[in-house]
Image (cartoon, rainbow, N blue to C red; front, side, top):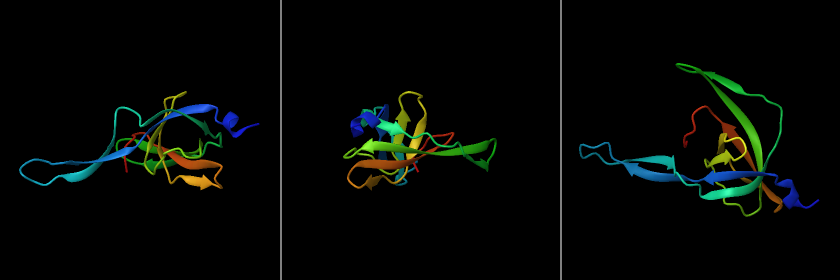
Length: 121
């Protein structure tokens, strides 16, 4: 079995873009991060790992927030970065990427976090 056969899912990758938005009144712009409307990498072959479901809960107003951590494998050389937004094309679920790890020049492993509201950190 070749490594290419392992990548049985597809995902879209959005890089966080830094911009400066002024609040007006002659004040300087503060840096803010957002994702573009078009994916930087569309239809990337990948593999979302199946693991035990163990979410963490944080009590917030007005609702309790649920955070889920998953693992993603990508082909070596894929341009994935910390805080990228990754969307599973099969389910439409959005994740935020952790630090990408090069696994012995074989593939890239990334921890993903899913939150109720997707935003750049």
